[in-house]
Length: 307
Image (cartoon, rainbow, N blue to C red; front, side, top):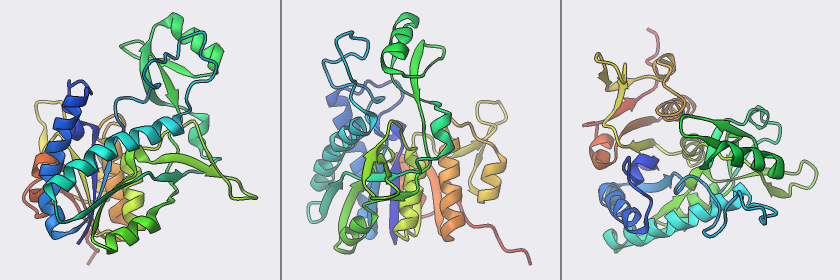
């Protein structure tokens, strides 16, 4: 079976943990241990979230008056892919000594006319004071929004149209390689309508939706979305919450899960199942093997035909 594993940020880094190097390494060991058994039995592609919220390289501060042009988001996303990718590859090689393991920096093509470019809503980078936010808005033309912690930059999140390296990933899978790719949703790019030339854009791509797009392109059998909860809950955050163990795409959408937590995971699972007829599941990292074998997590399956 061909499985695309999507690692949520809370699977890589437990809630409340700092993204220090030693903590990050320990989290990667947990990931590799949890998915190694799947790699013994199945073709495996591993996607992941970004590192700490996208920010500038060490030593640079966006609020510095001397900083003429901050690093663009597409390059910051590529940097994050490389950082987490190398940690995953090293650790997976240690637990799978007889397997090829490789990390591929992947690019996600988005539409230049995607409506998301007119409605930037995804927060990235550090928290700023009101004074810093005003300075950055004027100096760099950034849009910033206030939340309960302060001000943060908000950027577009266009939908993934195509993972450009999916053919390469397919060849690697056919060779028996475990592939780490599509980190942070992939580096967002648009193509020139006339020349086809690629250009990075100031945006981010949702990692769950990118994983679903990749899984569809690879003709995967199973999309496995791993996080830090054992399954989806109906009524989450209320005294009457209950686990959802088996669900269809239509039922997932009818539940209206929040956009800032379970919503993108639910939508990614629904899209993959609808578009391929395959299976998807959402659950806890440490139960990855049990989820694929139907003993844990929330299974998302196609709608049953009406008799």
